[in-house]
Image (cartoon, rainbow, N blue to C red; front, side, top):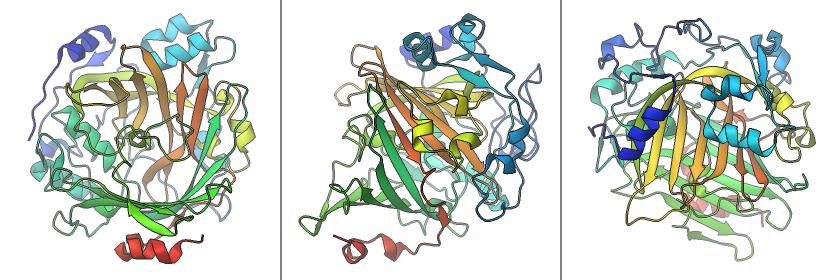
Length: 452
């Protein structure tokens, strides 16, 4: 197991961030389900009650067909904002905000705001995930400088983390269901507010999370992923196939691209790190999808601590299918009237580019939800140590699956005055649960399914 190491930058960050609690917790799997939730969060609420005790998360049967994305179906619909952070009262809340949020207030003082609602600890997972998490806590480890996840399957591998890499691995394999077909619509919003939707259909098998998965049966794959571009017309027909590996030293991510003009599928080793993300107009890198994905080897990863902060959560209004993309993506930033922020306990994780490696981002600070292990926000710095981009993930719980997923996510470019909305699906069909066979994710399958 890799050990916690604090770099000088992490120590400085630790000293300057207020409201950090000790990361020393009972390092014992027996605490899962007692002082810790089955996923490793603190069971108790905070001292003033603004963060309540975890009581099992959101429990709901599936809403009536066609109502799944209607916010009125969820208990959060009756909540009213406790307050709204604006530029006029910013100083009252400054110590609860990320540097990225503060930068957005500074850049857009007349329009940017954050409505803050009561904290609802809706996060949960199926019982078999809890059981696997407890088993993983006693057996899982990282090898090869943290690039190889071993002796773990189904559940969170490190519910009581001892290193930054353990936390980011928790995020990468957190429970999002077993298989689905969903839409990922990206809107690259220009300085004037215009955008052209880039539409992608994605087939995903969360191989690691299948209830019968074992470390041996994974065959070194944690996720199978297929991405079909359907719009705009000039890009339609492009297909990306990815097999995400658990031991990235033994075998790096496998990726292939199908080009409809050539009618051929080819290996694509550049689908990783800071190469441009599909359909993002240069506003995100490959490793920014889902806040972070892929190999961790170009950075050091250090736990700064735990902190109570105002961050996106329970974003049912942003997932509402009666809301159109024009309603969501407005000039300069999202329509903040549709957003929901809560006081959340998060792990603060600092990543710094290693000497001798390359990436357009020199440093990133991640804010990771303790209840679901979802990265909720990222501060992104350039080579001059200047804040460059700000990333937010607006999550929802899908209660009938007991799985976490995105209403949408954003990447703001502070220099270019543009931003990206991704993983939106308001105007598309609802995601479908699918029991994909691994044969669906082969190069031969892609050739047969390609439409152009």
